[in-house]
Image 1 (cartoon, rainbow, N blue to C red):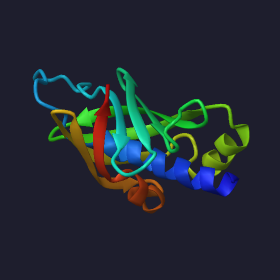
Image 2: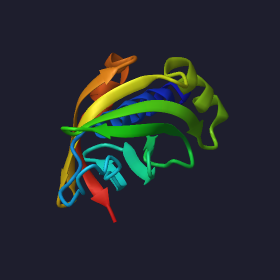
Image 3: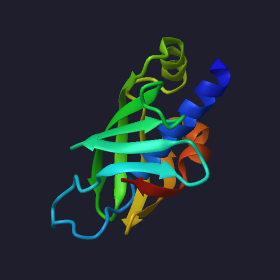
Length: 146
């Protein structure tokens, strides 16, 4: 089961990284680089991403951050590119955190585009460290969780 958890975690981590690089939704104030917010679920998948607090992104490959979550710091560039860096791992599965850390070590950087409007978002153009490992898992359409 660990390989499946690891694969899902990698996909989720990459998805989060990708989702933070998309343009923020409408209503952003000029110069506000931290306009991303809320929790989002990938359509047709388990992956969830959460813009937990200013500059913090959490990616839960299996939808439950209590099990495993990839924690990243992020910044938003114009025109909607999100730059992220892995800062740690959370969850109650120590073996899964160790395995993910071997594949996506702390300090790994990635970027993506994020566009959101009316509760629907798209994460695209994932680039960066080990991007080929997570791109297919992160890119796609997301729905905002209420």
